[in-house]
Image: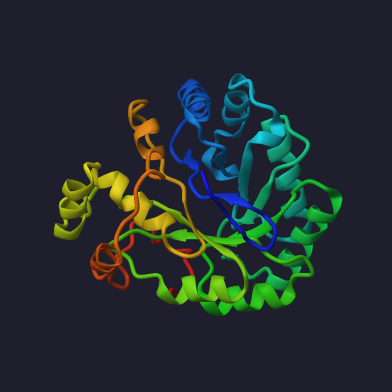
Length: 275
């Protein structure tokens, strides 16, 4: 599996997402994903599954340094003391001394200055609690501001991205700053994406599933990482089997032409003003 150079982070291009996975299911699916060849696992304090994710990583038998682990700090915990306490609590639940990537999950919804949060995130890096730091759900203006405030280069901006949502502006900003753009909900949860003509045609041409075509479309873009989540064990190796073929330029363009602005799954009252 190739990695995306993200200001030195080296993020595996395909990760296993764990949003909505809980308890023994989360543990077993994480362990199975790692046994299948995944080396990147994504969780968050808000998911309520960090303890199970940590157990799944240990159950895999892999050494800790073989797994790239991301967690995220919720938008209500971005005052300096709260942010540090949140990451420490995540480490306690995971039962690890360090994560590979710590992200601000969403921009503050209660007026905490971005400078305060970024300074605290840098302090977590300096303490050794995170090998790399970054943000999630930041539109371009906030991303530019965060980059300017951070002493340590930011590794990524994790955002919703799939063939139904145009993220050209955010993607361009990430590449300008040397950051990865990490795609959550990369498959549009199935939705209309699987039956869209360019995706169906590419699936037939390459003998792959629509999901595999979409994930290949993600990782074939410059600096893009995808973190699909599945509850179906059989789909774990299927989602990973995307590095043995390549989409043509015309196939990539046809899939990209499906994207439109504002076609979001995740849009909440606390969301920022999107690009």
